[in-house]
Amino acid sequence: MEILHELVDLVVQAVPTVIIVVIFYLCMRSLFFVPLQRAMDERARRIDGAKAEAAAAQAAAREELDRYHDALKKARAEVYLEQESARQAVLDERAKLLRTLRARTLEMVQEAKARIDAESQTARAEIQKQTPVLAGQISKMILERSAPAGGSR
Image (cartoon, rainbow, N blue to C red; front, side):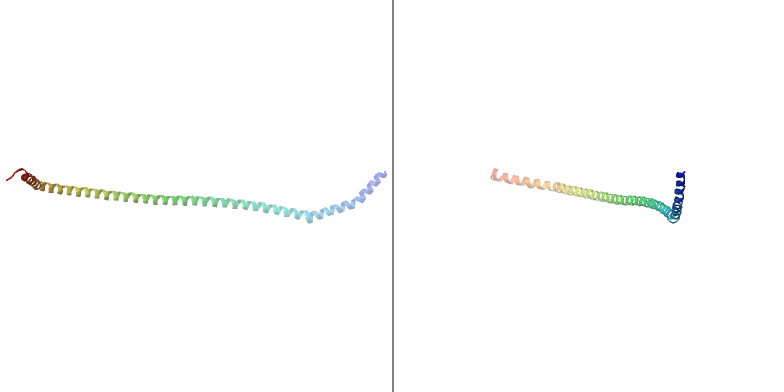
């Protein structure tokens, strides 16, 4: 029984300590743990909100980047199209110039041929006209050369 009595004394002596610990726990809970828990919840909520905002900003930036790339592709396509049309215009102008030069050259060749033909006709006509005269002169010269050597008249 003495053990029981000692146990009761021990429990009676421990009751004030238990009461102080319970009061300390309640004070700590209301003054420290609850505000700390609220602050941690608020922090977690803000972190989640910031993550959501960052994700939204990243998605918006990605969309803006996609629009930029699309606009850049369109601008490049337009520039390439303009360059191609300018190149085609230069090629067309070059072909036109070549056709003009070929036509002019052909015309000059035909004029030269016509002039040569005309000069040739004139020369033939002159030769035809001078042939009897030249033949007479040649005959006369031949006869004059052969006459003094062959005869004494």
